[in-house]
Length: 296
Image 1: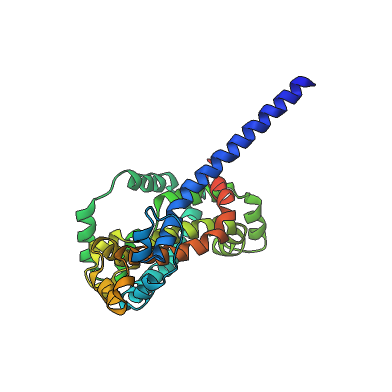
Image 2: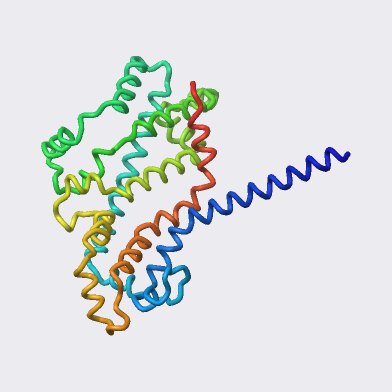
């Protein structure tokens, strides 16, 4: 009995240490978000008086006001929203269709198709051939240059294919007995039972689309077509002198807005939409990804 008591005590101490470790890890992870938040509502006076700036000593919305008064911000926001909504729709349509077809073992040439798809994960043409391809297709300075080159992810396609393989064939057999074809089976049987899985990959694609900047940097030269991430880059790297000078002209000398405050406010506004979506889909992560990882 004593040995069990000692073992239970050791287990209790280990659990406490484990909880403390994960609490510390969570704090370390959350601190950058916390710092961005408090700095986005700070001003020059408070940051100068309190070094390091660890608590929200003041709440000054000038940084957000500066961003929201800039028409370029809303243009970039609309471009990112369009790229995200349309891009995710195309991503999911092509990925689901392709994965469902490749999950059928009776498909003629299935192994050849899979080999060709896997080949693209290892080798690519590179930046210059990709640019020439987009240019020849007439998509330079077009919003479609941020959507179509990444219309499908090979990695996600393979995971979806493995997930469809894990669905019992009896579901499809029962639908075929009722006279349904493959398209009807996919729409009315496979997709409804796969909603947690679909929600997970919708979020994965949405995060990638919302954070789109690489294709925009290569193919977009016009300011009116640049997405939110490029706008954020301008704020962070070039300090966005025009916005800061406009905000400073509105304020007294003792309350001038810091360029860093505008930057942090822009970061908060940029990541807020994805932060709002994550909690709604998070419960599907484990189930969706783990099931999709089942091998044949």
